[in-house]
Amino acid sequence: MKEVKAEDSESIEDIVELSLLYSGSDVTWVAAIETLCDEFMAQNPNIIINTENSGEANCENELKVKEALDEFPDIFELENVDAFADAGKLGAIDAEVSNMVTNVIVINKKSYGLPIYATTNGVIYNKNIFKKYDLEIPDSYEEFIQICDTLKAEGICPLAIGGNQEENMTYWLNYFFQKDIMEENPDWLEMRKERSVKFTSAESIHMLEDLKELFSKGYILEDSENMTENQIVTRMTENQFAMIYAGPWLFTKPANKKSIAN
Image (tube, rainbow, N blue to C red; front, top):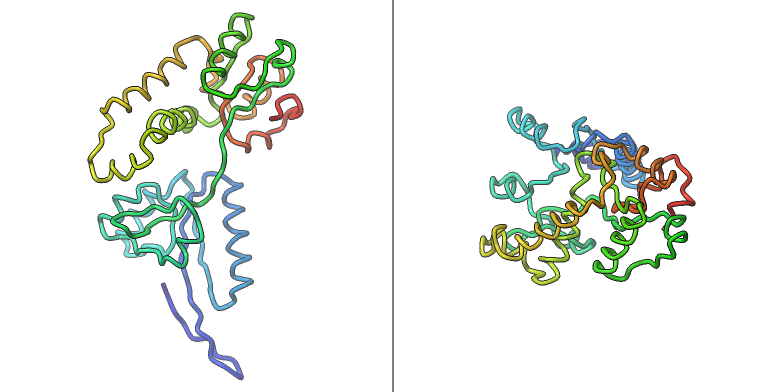
């Protein structure tokens, strides 16, 4: 962090310069970050944020280069917070800031990371197919599986995965992690940091068995794991499958959104 003096005819003002490194593989994300920084600087004229994006989906490789060049940024995106904290590369975040948000990353009772965004994933379904086969929105995972069995029996593909090749399995894996592990043991992640639970434990194996069962029952649209989000939306509006587990950003894709709304 740099601090410089700016002097005008009446006063001397401290100007603080901060460097920000963020992921740059998504043009929408790049635009959002740059807009946010511009708005922040407009509201805080004594703070200058020098932004740089990594051009990749995450910043870790770029951070290693910055470290070697002694140009480590002040603020940056990071997935592997524990490793960087253990290496002494992170500063603790004051409670005044960390208390403003949820899901703060806490290591040894100190806050080291804040979430960059929050979203909600859920099952997006084709209303036309549900109406045709008189299907109700399920209230449980068991009812969801019953719907998949009904659709399969009618010759309708129940599910697709895909849209983002880096994340097409992440949504379901995270769902089963929440359902099979976190609901039973909310402290599991903290216990994992302390190495008091393992990924080879019974609950972890149960999670992977549930995931394997879902993907081995013939519910998944063939080759959908290699499709783009636009292709997924197009095939859904063409009634080639009934459901996909994803986030609300899927609605921004060019297609007949009315037929997949909910």
